Image 1 (cartoon, helix red, strand yellow):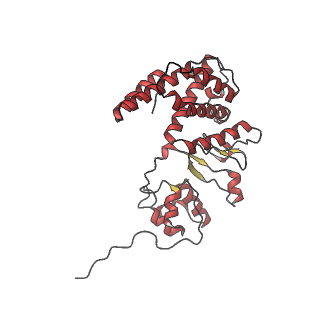
Image 2 (cartoon, one colour):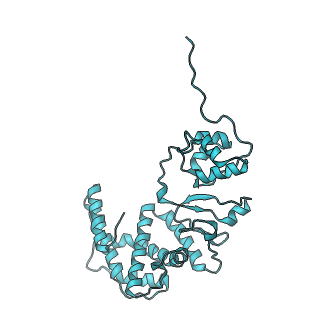
Image 3 (tube, helix red, strand yellow):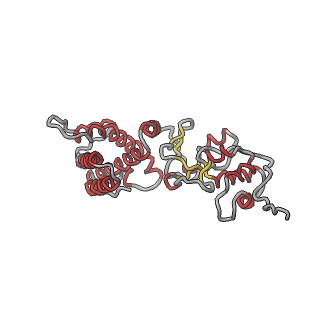
Amino acid sequence: MATVRPWPRGPRQRLPRTIAPFRWEAVSSYIDRLARANHIGVSTLRGHVAESCAARPRPDWLAVVSGQPEQVIRSRLCGLAGDPTALKQYLRRPLCQRCMARKGIHEPVYCYLPAHVSVCHRHRRWIGSPTRVLDDQVDLRDRPTVLSAGRTHRRLARQYSEVDLHDALGDARHILVFWAHAERHVAAGILQNGLEAHVVAYPDVIAVAATLLTARPRVEQPRTPTEPAWPTLLLDRINERTGAHHADATPVEQWAQYRRLFATAVLTTRSDGAELACRAEGSAVLNVPYQ
């Protein structure tokens, strides 16, 4: 009896023109660009590289069609079939318009960029949150503090884990919000919504987060009789870095208290239940939700 061979599945030939994917690029963005380069319908190409119209593109099928190595497809694109990446941790934003123009690309290239990729230093443009379209990319040529904060943000991302940096940025925002309310600074960027307010607040957020990360190891150590007044020292350091004149050390004291609680619980037991309980207790101290 003759063996029945399965019907061939998936594409078997590459398109005439290929383009290279960018790191962190959304697979939908890459397929759009690949379809335009070959003058075919985007929906047609999407259906050609996925199991169904509702499924994510398969990396092996997309590699055949694009002519790119499958390893390149897997390592650079986000949102492929079987991709375990939690895309909610990142923001889908277009890469710098001028960087793309230098490469001969004149349509938006959308990527799930990490939070620390917020500034294009080559062209001095804002590409961070909450940028959604190319017109949102703010010119930073007259904003040296934002450019400097962008470099500091990248350095922090290299030095600290993603979780630690995320927590520090959240704590920094809470501290700045406290001061804005306490000092009745209703015009503070940290209290406003929108792109411009986010850019205005960015240098202070990064400066406060960097200060907290630097001080955290010492603050988390057990108290000693000769311990310096860390909240006061932190307040002075924050004022020095931001050029502000905050006088109320309450949010810094709350942050230090939370860090001590968390460190004590971790030293007592490494169980997940203790860490979650400590986070909940610390959230009560700061009066903010921790996620």
